[in-house]
Image (cartoon, rainbow, N blue to C red):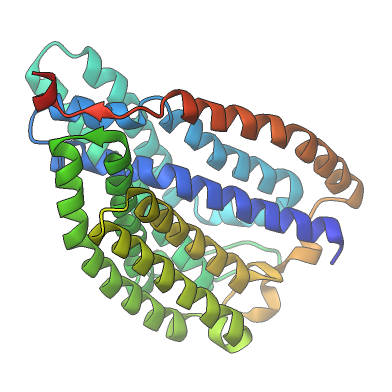
Length: 336
C-alpha cells in the first residue's frame, strides 16, 4: 500500500464525515417539517433554517462519490453496481426532498403545500435510513466473487443488523436536526426542540447499545481490531453523553457539536473496520483491498496536488456562507 492510496482512503472517509455532519442536520430538520411544526407558519421557519445550506451540504456526497470513482474505481464499481437499487431509492428520496422545498413555497393551495411538506419529511427520513442501512450491511460482508461482482439478495441488504443501523443513523440525524433548530431559532420552536431531544436521547442510547452488540456478532471488527474498535465505540457513547448533557444543561453548541461528532464517530468506526479493505466479502479471499483497488500512482499523485490546492478555497467559502446566515429565526408567535 502506497502513501497516496492511504491518503485517498482517509480523504474519502473525511468527505463522508463532512457529509454526515452537515447533511445529517439537514435530514433531521427535513424529518421535522410535518412531525415537529404545528402549523404552516412554523413549517416555513423550520425549512428556512436549512434553506441557505442544504444543497451545498449535498456537495460533500457528490465529492465523496467522485473521489471514490477517481481514486478507487474497483471500489466504486462494486459498491455502486451491487447497491444499485438502494442507491436509486436514496437518489429518489434526495430528489423529492430537494424539490419539495421549492414546490411547497410555490403551491397556491393548502392541499399541495401539505403534500410537498410530507414529501420533504418522508424524503429526508428515507434518505437517512437507507444510508444507514447501506453502510451497515456493507460492513457485515456481502457476496462478492473473485471478479469483484456483487450478487446479493434481499436479506443481504435488509436484515436485523442493517435495519438497526438504519434506525440508529435516522435517530442520530433527528437529534442533530433538533440541535440545529435550537441554534437557529428562538421562542417556541427552540423550546420545543429542547423538549423533544430530552425524550429522544434515551432512545438513542438504547439504539447505540443494540447496534454495538450486533456489531460484535455481525462483523469482524472486534476480532481484527479489538482495541481501536472498542475505543471508537466508547468515543461514540462519550460524545453522545456530552450532547445529552448539553441538552439537559441547555448548552446549545455543546449538544450540536456532540451530535455531529456522534455521526462522525460512526463513519470513523466504519472506515477503521474496513481498513485495509474497501469492500468486505463473505469469503475473505475476495474482499477488495486498498492496495489493489486504486487508480495508478500518477493519477493519485495528480489528484492529491489538485485536492490540496482547491480544498482551502472551498472551505473558506463554506465557512463564510454559514457566517452570513448565522442569525436566529424567530418563531411565528414572535412575528405576530
